[in-house]
Length: 109
Image (cartoon, rainbow, N blue to C red; front, side, top):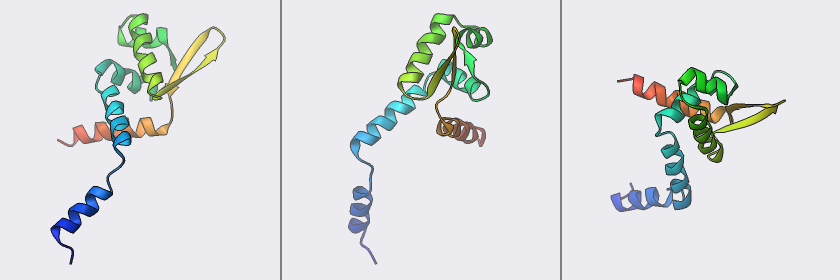
């Protein structure tokens, strides 16, 4: 049987590297803004351009563009150009899973 000190040492040795934990904390900060969460919610349903997101959320195009820039830099959304329009979508299915699991968690209460 392991001693408590051995268990604690094992747990400490299995922690992710400090840099990864920092990056994870930064990712969760991005999710800490309700405007960005609303945008992610929309993009989990459909590819949309800035003006469409702006219309649905009743926010200015510049406010939406600013939030999308943050989401792009965090690799949460990506874009595709179709003619003159730029359409945004979630970067991958991990983002949708994080979003869905967060919703499930808060709805358990």
